[in-house]
Image (cartoon, rainbow, N blue to C red; front, side):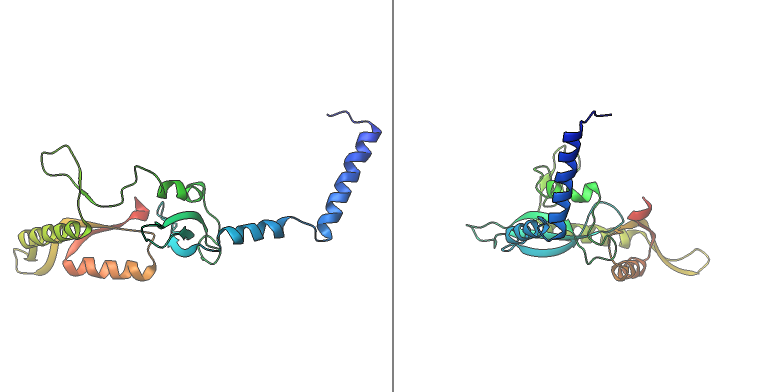
Length: 196
């Protein structure tokens, strides 16, 4: 235990009493800190988004500066929890709180990459090329492996050689539509990222 004499004890208690009295009278620094935060983000563009890490799907507020022009490249400067989001109500886990580092990481992929068969290198390709390639390969696989009827003549309309893993950070409506689209293709292998 710290040894205090009477004079030190009176100084500490007097300072504590004065500080708490000033805070009760309205001299607390929280208003000033809030004004600094508002000033810092006043020119920023606010965008709502969902955290990409896990299946909880916490809401985010992302603030960016810049208009995308050559002299002002748009860049995210601040990320915080969305207080209006029903899942996290403004709070974030440590991974979500450090999301700004994920966004600005030099090793983060920002476009699709393709590795040719037999190659040991990945090469960047355009989004349109990647989506066209995925659609073409899915069509080829479905045409080659679609089962319309079983051997005894029962209609099954199934495609067993391709599966789908859905994102769990999506809303119920997006999940419902994803399920309907996947089932309309005849895909039976369908699961959700939350179970992985």
